Length: 153
Image 1: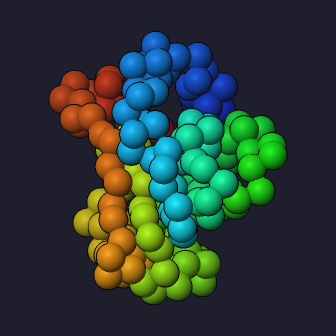
Image 2 (image 1 turned 30 degrees about the vertical axis):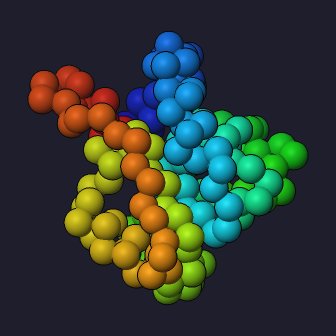
C-alpha cells in the first residue's frame, strides 16, 4: 500500500494534466477571489494553491504524506498557505481550527476519498462562520471497482 500511495502521488499531476486544463476556469471562478480564513480539504499535490489570492489565509490539510510533499513544492512564495499532514476528520484539527472561524471550506475533487463524509460535513458546519460557505467542485463516485479503488488512495 505504501508503494501504491507513493506511486499515485508521483504520477497524479501528469495524469490529471488534461482534466486540470478543463477545470482551470472553474477553479479560477470558484476560488480565485476568496479572501479570509479558508480550509482547503485534501489539498493533494497543491493544485488549488495557484488560484488563492494573497488575501486568503489558507489551512491546507492532506492525509497523504506523499501528496503533501508535492504540495509543499507549490507553496514557495505563498506565505498565506499553511499545510498539515492530517485528514479532515482528524481530532488534531480541532486544536488548529476554532469553531466558527472559517469564511470558506474548499473541497475540490476530494469528497470521494473521505472515509466518513457525514462526519466531515458536520465538522465543516462547526468550523464555518454563520456567514461562511462550503465551496465544492466534485465528480460522481465511480461505479466500477478499479476506478473506485483509485478514488480511495
